[in-house]
Length: 420
Image (cartoon, rainbow, N blue to C red; front, side, top):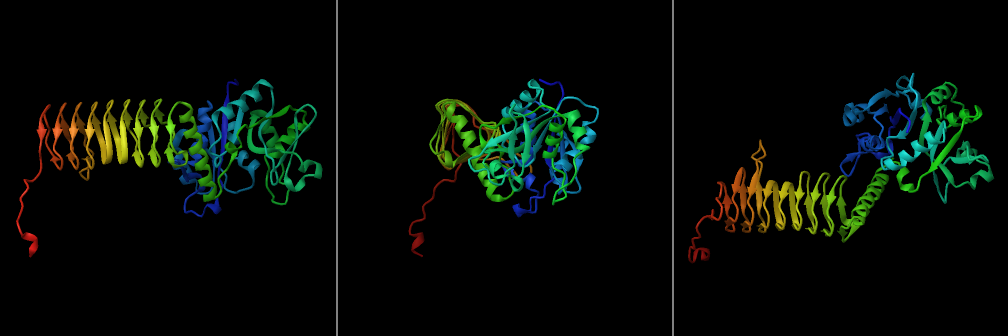
């Protein structure tokens, strides 16, 4: 692969149709901002040198991306070619390839970007476009190829002939350019259109006129190139990502009973033969072992690690919980900032009182312990192996191994009291 691979992420758009006080680029899909997903996709494709072209509400975009990218400013919205022009300072004097990506297209697979780069390098193409085949291409720029397969033109819908309207291959708006030839072509493009904008597609025409080789990669999954302009599209792309993630887990041997009502975030590991019941949410970074049972209506938050054969039942929330093999939290419990040993049973309505208003503290429960229903474990507190906590207890002190802990008021019956 080419030694120097850069990327330009166009992230200056307004997105007024989103109807939000925030930039559309910082709206979240599964807990991660749209523009961050676009940048991470480039990083996962092996690109380390990334320039974000920012403009409208740039402070929000920069706060999300931080120092993982460099920044170029586009103060006026004068088209895609103009956006790339703002990054020229970062391209000058460099050789190799530069990807041009859209910050509002968050679901492009890194594997697809790698295909684009590899074809551009191996075939010595000066621009390689990502294209798609649409049965109904109305509204999209059509890809016109010559007999040798070169991209001879990208014709916008309003300029197409009747013959060109029949072309089903469309421009996806993602490119891999030779850096030096891109810089040369950017000097030549003009805003000769009704909008007075600089079109990046004109660069392709200029390269063709110079006799430079061009080409394309047809994307296999058209959902990868979907962009976001409003909340309807935001929900649609969220659903696409949900299906993509759930499908990958099922391919690896996880049973998901209802893919439409199971929400598994990025970077979750789930072992074979684990069953996920409906209305379960599993946040990023969670690790779940084999033969576990999760849900329904369970919320597995960040920092959780579940060993094999763990059961997390209905209406259970766990956070930063490490749970040993064969242990069960069957229902109606909150277990946060805790370590639970092997083969424990956590009774219905048990909670760890892990936050005192200033600090989070930890609860540790040893192996083979039984926690009765409606127990409050006031952290920091440690329970040894094979402890038994009586139902309705509030545990504020450590419990030694094999002990029975009872921490509740003795029952008193006042006869005839309610006749009053």
